[in-house]
Length: 304
Image (cartoon, rainbow, N blue to C red; front, top):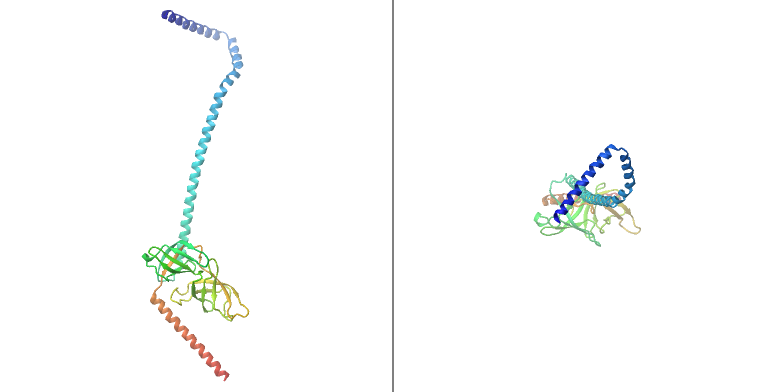
């Protein structure tokens, strides 16, 4: 049986091979068959397209899915790069701002011969009547209570507490702050006190007859041996004379960027220099009192 099956298989192969050769010879010698074949191809084309459509559709869906996946991946990658670039830009802006602040601080110390150090604000407390900040310098850097703190455009305040690594700065707007000042235009001496966070300063105990005008610049007088002399404190922005009151209400705007600066200067002011300035100031006061007494005596004599 196996022999018969193999014999029939060989006969079939031989038959189909001979039949193929006959068809090729006839196709080559008969051009009409080409036209017939073309017509049959056109007739079967719709069936071929229909049979191939599911496979083509699957290939298109697969291609679209892969393209969408690639776009999503690329979009995610670009977003990450964008965030990184934005972070770098923000860092560069922060560094630029810090450099500008440092330049302003260094420029503000051009006339100072005392030791200074840059300190960073770590935290700020602006609750109620308290206006304080925490600095990143402490006993380790020889910071002391009462030490003056300067900004790029004016007095910031003074140190009121010192720890090993940090210290506490009381801003001049704190209600417990009092800064001796002098009017640069007239030489009038007075005291500026704080009225609370985000509020202006107040120039106190100024008689109605005193020569103080809006726009006058108030600088530290050096009295009290706390702040260096001649450093800007504020500018007079409003004067209100109250009926029946002996003193005027004078509002002062701080020159320092109290709520914007993140870097400040700690100043080690020479004690000997302070004492010398205090002695000179005391001599000036004595001379002024002497001149005033002489004026009084002259008036009494003229009246007599």
